[in-house]
Length: 72
Image (cartoon, rainbow, N blue to C red; front, side, top):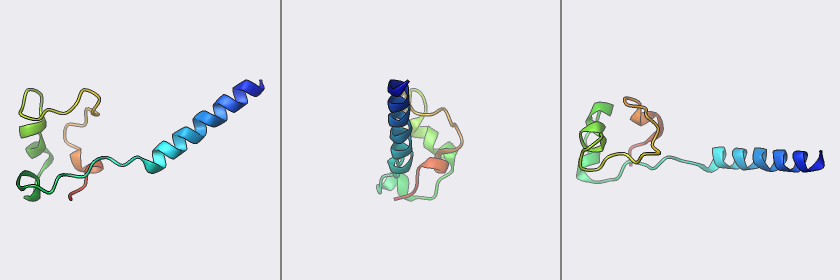
């Protein structure tokens, strides 16, 4: 029982710390990202098979880029 409480408390603390400290990457301050953009513009480069596709672990939010990513 004590082991369960210790493990559960440790997991809860790690989850809170991750949630508070985790920040998605900001948009780079380069020419491609400085112009005003719509989410569909992101997928021109970051869509499947494009020049800089999103990583496999990226959430599948196709039109919600700016809910997480902020301008530089």
